[in-house]
Length: 162
Image 1 (cartoon, rainbow, N blue to C red):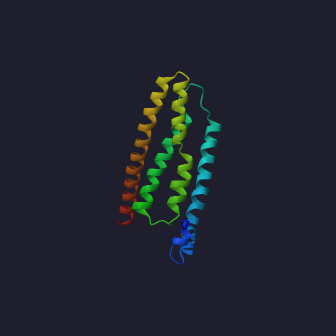
Image 2 (spheres, rainbow, N blue to C red):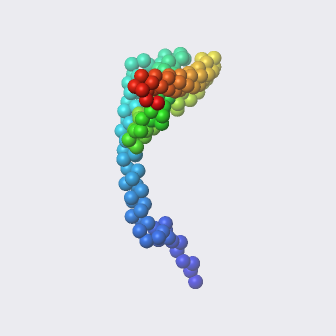
Image 3 (cartoon, rainbow, N blue to C red):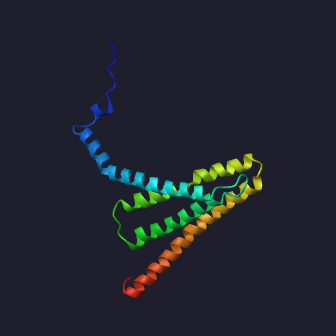
């Protein structure tokens, strides 16, 4: 006697499950699309920055450093605006946060730069870059959050709202 073939996911699901799964995808489709569009824009901007200001072999990777710091600052501003100041459209965060800023910042390149500097015999530069990027990223987010909250509070006070 042969054992029965295991049921597939579609066969074990309740009636209507394939339609439900398709509707879940349709519901996520706009978010996936805006993340892709934002990611393309952010990655293109980062690539443009790398073309304008290429890193010197063995030197401190200033372009990646400033791109990551600027992206962290922008993320701090964005998060305060969309969580504390505005009620944004549901696709604003995926487009700008995950897409544009996720594509713009490049912590994978940061890791590769550190590895490359070490392999090329520049451990001091690699360690300085490692620490400086970490500190700059955290400082950028903190500064952005604090300054955006301050500006927002003053703006609201000037308008007579809280």
